[in-house]
Image 1 (spheres, rainbow, N blue to C red):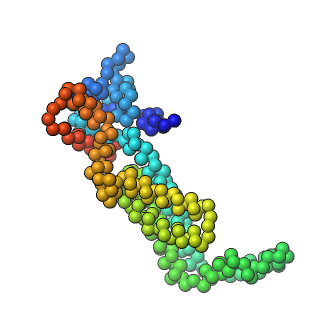
Image 2 (tube, rainbow, N blue to C red):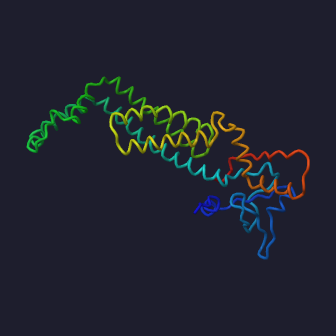
Image 3 (cartoon, one colour):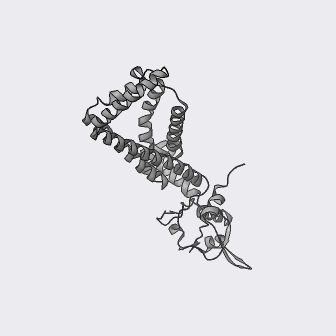
Length: 275
């Protein structure tokens, strides 16, 4: 059973109606009923009682995502949430490394004291703390230079910033964010593959699979880097799915329009779009 993204979104966010100045197009979007005036929703196509939310020339109407465009926006926002959450976690890691670099000696002494206390207990249960891989890894970090730790913290902070900016851009459906997502995600894929060669885990496999699918989906679906016609083809497809475009094309066919095909309406997206 397929999901009706248009009606589902309208049920959550409400309908969007518009009264175009063009008489023939306005007729198709307007209806008079016994209980009042109704206008077609630009997203789901249902008639809604009440006055339109806006009016003016058709080329000034808001570009309302519908159909595949709305589904794509939902997927992008899922990726946006994942990117922002990852960025916040990396920020915490950067802060922890920075704090550790400023109190490295104190943490070392505290760790050695605790290790001395727990060594008899661990020995009683047959666990050798002096040859533990975990303890050995922690002790090695105490030998890192403070400048190295601060450089690592700065690198983590820069990575976190990229993730957060990318997530915000994807949430609002910005094309530059799609390019950033593809480039940034693809750049870290070799590192994720290398980590799998060191140690395999379901979490690492799932993360790698999600990132590969995200890169392919955005790269091909959004026609980046000139693929499948590039940005021009993407914009033409998005405009072609607009309800106003569909109705205008139907009106041309109904009235037997001849001659060269009419160019699509230059529908423009506004900041007031209700996504």
